[in-house]
Length: 213
Image (cartoon, rainbow, N blue to C red; front, side):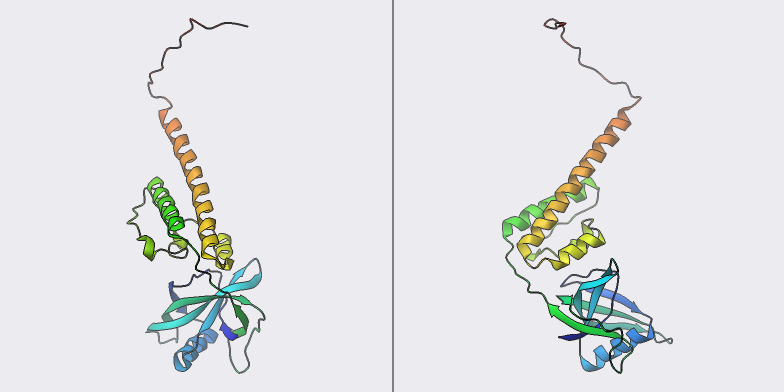
């Protein structure tokens, strides 16, 4: 499928509401075409000097149009795709485009996996002293809090490429467990540092059975 493309150094996940400020002429034209022709566009992730994967976007609302032609818009992230070809400028247009191949999304995640991941997220937030209201298991999927668990852009890009929900949940769980471990060690170190210089009680050692070899 051929899709207009709007490369960005950001990762967007299906189901996400995305606010964008549109200031370049080519993308003002793109948004106008999306509005007038009810078409979608793609945001391929520009990372490591490549454009390989991205997310299809649907224009939801133009919030503000400025005298300069700039716009504030809200888009809805839909399907994930792989970039097959890239043209810097589509014929008769200012903006880029290319052929894309949509990835199949396999919804094979289990409730038990989601319970474990949500428990890890709760523990992570507690360690960071950040409030976490919780999410019903039935309403949670691997994309729901993907931007709020400390993933790097490269990790988010990796997650974007995983087609099976069970594997995405395993990926997130592994990241959370590693992050929790680091934070626990940091907190332990802080406790030791805080104890330095304070009076402490030490348990006396029992030397009755102590022998020198």
